[in-house]
Image (cartoon, rainbow, N blue to C red; front, side, top):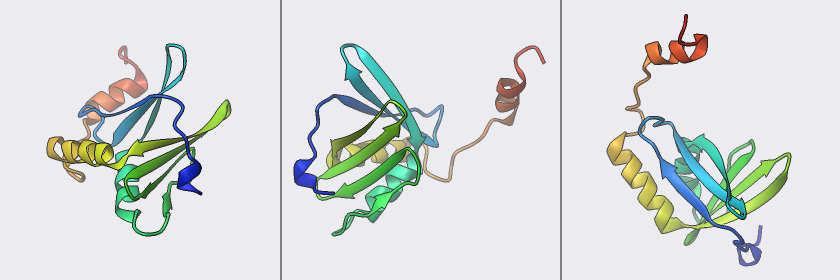
Length: 125
């Protein structure tokens, strides 16, 4: 993939929520006021940042693949309705991951089994 020919043509927001500490959400503007959220593993983003050395090491096997190289992070998204490659500033991604690590260190996530079971079986069960 040639970094020089990747062009950002949309806006996107990357966020971390302590209520879902295993994930990050990338919300992408698809046109007008339409925004589409992509939720993927925080570890996928972390792995890409660690792998991003002098070669283009792509991380991810599914609909979200991430490559960190130099001052940018490329997030490649595939869906039935289209394909997009977003180029994010590496400093912004580093900052988000640092803040997420301070709020909920990786490996320190806690699963509330009672809440999860309630979600699975419904409130009336």
